[in-house]
Length: 151
Image (tube, rainbow, N blue to C red):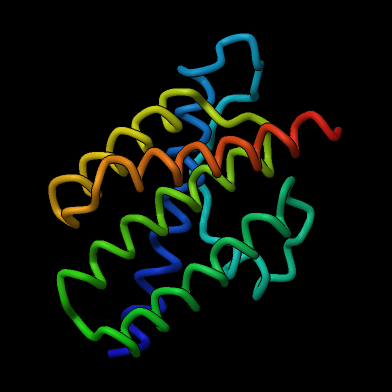
């Protein structure tokens, strides 16, 4: 069963590539990209000794890390709603990381939707106080703002 989760992780990472390209095209029209073409997962290209693909290391890395994370989630939580939820969260953050690695762009539509979802989940499902959520948000903002100004 753990092999099924590894394949699910690879498939999820493989689907993140066209999703990231699509979101870049609609979210940042000033960025000109070549037409998108479907291709096999990077592990297939690795076994075929075809490494001349652009961003090969990034895409292969995302696929291998995703396989590892999905296997780890299965080993820790099994097949539960929590493991499914954690896989969705991982896929969201992996999508943001992939877009940042490839294009150096993090789209506002992903950032704002992630903030709203985190706020709703923390208030409604986890029953955390609004004050602790705001303190965490302010702390995170200060860290990212500090990192941005140090460049």
